[in-house]
Length: 192
Image (cartoon, helix red, strand yellow):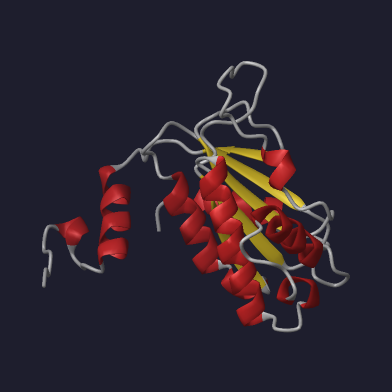
């Protein structure tokens, strides 16, 4: 598969002793950060007790994503006592409960993916709608965090610069895999 070097880099940076590890995938838009995060999550799903996907394009999207994460935790981990008593309409309370769950002892094998962090709160970004991701990161120093962003200035973990694919065959491999159409790389597409 294309992007093997990046996938190995992400895996190496997120592997460890249970303490929190963070990877930031950054590049221009349309290069494949989200697809790379999906590929990583699929490939290493057995390494994690839970994988959560959050859309961090704006504060409302992020808070709604936390509500979905809370429901996923309750489905997959019904003994998450604090979450079962939370008012799901109070999104700030939901976020706190998710963060509390993430900090439970021996709960170190989860992966949080923050996708589309393209308006980060930085000294160089004067947009009042810019988000400070640190307010939404787990407070416990355990688990794994993967962030996708267009900004190379987001320095909250191991930076991986995602570059354009250098060979058109790599692009065709990705297209072939995601579309489930074999033969794209040799011009013999079996479309259905």
